[in-house]
Length: 275
Ligand SMILES: [Zn+2]
Image (cartoon, rainbow, N blue to C red; front, side):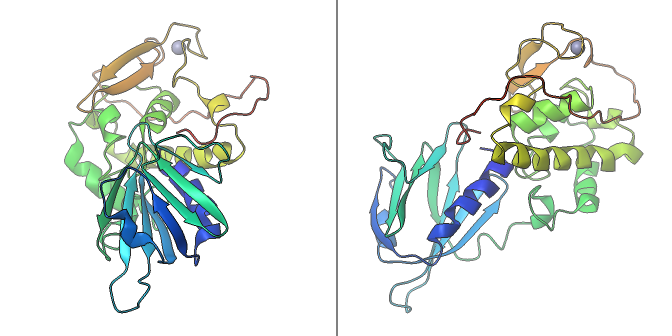
């Protein structure tokens, strides 16, 4: 799940804020029983991480903070009448049940969330393009496919964002940042930021997949060429790109951000719980 999906999850969890945990189960090795009888106090996200703060029942002990990362295959369900068999964590409140699956859950410390820099969180209202550009200055030799997955620079960006933004700027995944003129870096960072907010809107409308131009697609929507699928870069995550429209060039050239292509596919519901 990428940053925009975490923000949607946060919104969906709002109904449990201020509510007491009645029952806890799940196969996490963390001391989950200690959450019982505590009240969910704070719900926060940073990049791809969810932070839940549970108040102390006795007021004397400190609150507990859980940090959840959905990794590549994590998911969640809320009030699912047919939950899957092995949730990592299941939290029952009097007004509903939350299930987390295939994710990493760790018990952290109060203050862990506040220690993170909101200026790099693409979904934060404190996201700061000038700060992001300062960080990019140290990454001139980095491939764009790695830069767009670097959580220290673009917190919340994931493989969908990476592939779609690379297509929007018509660049090969192995383009080095140095091949984008410095004056275009704000536009580059904004392209990632803007895509994340489109992702958020589309997903809420159940229209995210309809807007995928190259991610998990087979043909280029511009020239009909067969898209290349390769695991590229330091992170070796799958890249989908058009060998013609996103050909690798070794010279520096002006950055152009093309608008996302209009959707022509028929209307269909999609599973909003993925990605
Ligand atoms: Zn093409």
